[in-house]
Length: 364
Image (tube, rainbow, N blue to C red; front, side, top):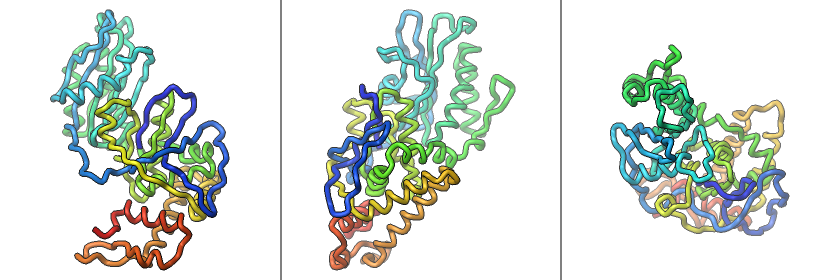
């Protein structure tokens, strides 16, 4: 899914072309957020994935007293393309001068994490007004890298040199630990990836969209693109990071692109392709389950995710009677003729077929 900033005051979503069909969902406006329905994009491209850029690097970007923004230091190295992209993500180059303390995102299978601070008068950085610590890595864990980059920021404020930062960075890469400026320690093992997956609130999403949450669920099940835009990047990132939990059985956060500018290379990296999506009676049942579970005050976000995951497994049982072993004997594939003979409602048949495609169960 892709996220971008826009001039609208609501969080808007584009999740695919929704057709009318028997048993279609009743439409009611969400109280604070809105759904904008239009052409959709498959979440995973059919062509080979783009090459990954180099992971694991650390950089410093400064804004001086003359208002100039400079990429002043990098370890070990990066490409010109990635450097230009990260400068665009860094709020120091924004004309509106809004300060974003922490942002994160993904570009060509590399995660970036950027912490930006204002330089106090007491710092040794006398000619610098603001700076950003930019870190790239191969894993999704905003809490881990927010904590780590804050430590690096304090080191840079105190020493005004990247040497201490580089030492701590290498220590974390090689040993998973470094000492902070407050006589504490940063431990990579304290930041479990599964906790990062569960950091958002699925109940908040359902409270905003109600039954229309099933549109998001269906889009993710079928590996469609979901486009989210909002004037505040923090709101976009808090919302989008939770969406992959709707398909918890995959536990795949690589589908998330939480900070996208509408530049040519970023749009190329997303590779959008149009396709349609239709809702039916099955989706209404899923939507009702999601809403009932999320509205239960006794249930945590984790329990709601578990309920949705169990319902998802139940959906896969619909495919089992129409599956057969492939000719090479390596996996199950869909027998489309058997599916058609079952005479499901058109929306259900279409959904099951595209679900099989998303799970790579079609015969080649």
